Image (tube, helix red, strand yellow):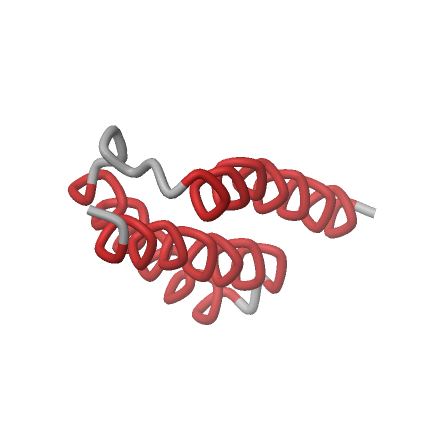
Length: 82
């Protein structure tokens, strides 16, 4: 049962980034987005994935993989629409 709570938390965490990604790509407004913050979030997600692999914790692995994808999409938008 506890693993399902982890999956639910992971889905909610990843989905929480979707409005920002969608808005950024629609409006092309990236001035206030911080590349430094994205670098830290992506780095932290990579470390969490390593931890998840070491502990075989799939909710951690999947959540942080999703976070990397969505944050990378914001980084691409930031670089494209400067």
